[in-house]
Image (cartoon, rainbow over all chains, first blue to last red; front, side, top):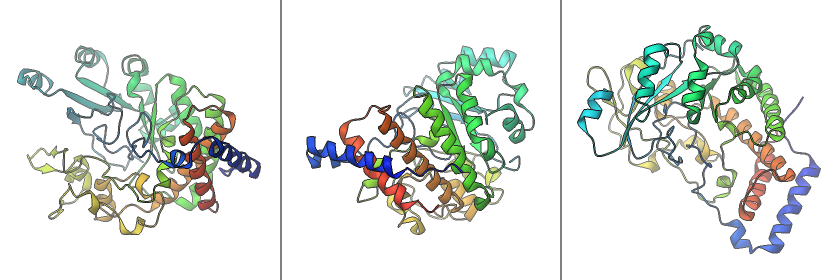
Length: 82
Length: 291
């Protein structure tokens, strides 16, 4: 069965990449976590229930209309069809 | 409403956003939508292949004018709902939606249903693994929203708990009787019961945490819908714990894909991002190895 675990050899390779970066860049620079970049180019990805009215860290595209008044047609969220 | 809004000449920009299953978007209504395209955005709900979509949505696939949406609203992408009955076809469904020409696929796991987690979790891993292979073979395709998780977030020592939406603050949902609700999910036609929220200050972000999740490294990135919490658990702060395994498998898949992309040099990243992503991958692969 396919799974999502990485092989030992790939983990080793990733370790080597980290090591190479550590040899070139200061540790503080490498470890500074950019919390703003929550997800690139998308809203925060709720379970879809916001129906496009979310106001998370989106990129301001028309599907995530931040900073505008939004009117929307809500659908009946009856999940019995599932 | 659209015409009334035009006439009101608001200084603030406005848009109308419609989510539709597409079955009634034809003829005159299409003409009207195009005429008002600058202010009326339309998003299509489409669950994947015709078979999957028909299973979820009453054999309605053939009633959708797909070309109309692809041509006129390509940037809106499609909204896809995944549930336990369709998970067996998940990778096919998503690659099918990519093949239609939509620029993005927003795929969400259904909330408020019985997931039979033990039954579906291995299949989900398998399907996401197949999907990772697809993205590795097609690096120009924008990954679906399942993979929209920024792994370095999990390295932060202090969790950055944020409210997920504007419910109760910038959002208001007005019912047909004029009563106001924090958002549409709190309306009684969704909850199917009277809504009694009590005195809640929706602006107090720090209160929007579920104590049961405080030890989970994924807490700050785990999707949360306060309305559906209320529908499912009668408590808007208490998350649906069925979603925990789904979220963990999802994060495991993201770590798998990112590792492969880094290995193959297929993703442009700053050195710090590569470093932190690898660090997060190591944590996730170790933390969730027994799922």
